[in-house]
Length: 94
Image (cartoon, rainbow, N blue to C red):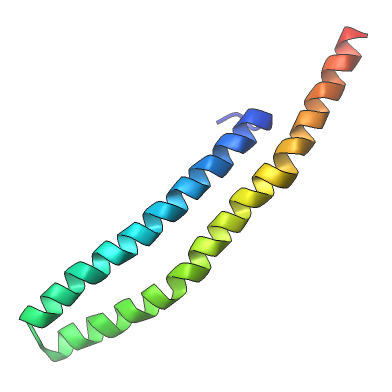
């Protein structure tokens, strides 16, 4: 990835894509673990489900942080790079 205007936009898109994947992975993991828990009820299974619940509760905060980072790249960083690139092009062309 080059870090220029296009690179900043691509990084933002990649982060947003990753945020969606994280939500899906947490949901899939919860589904699988619930199935395992229902079939193998034990102290260990209960402990794992409690830890999974803790991870799931933190998931939305993590996803929001990733989305906020993507928004910052798109709304703040990319326009700054565009301005620098345009100024550099004007100076070289002058």
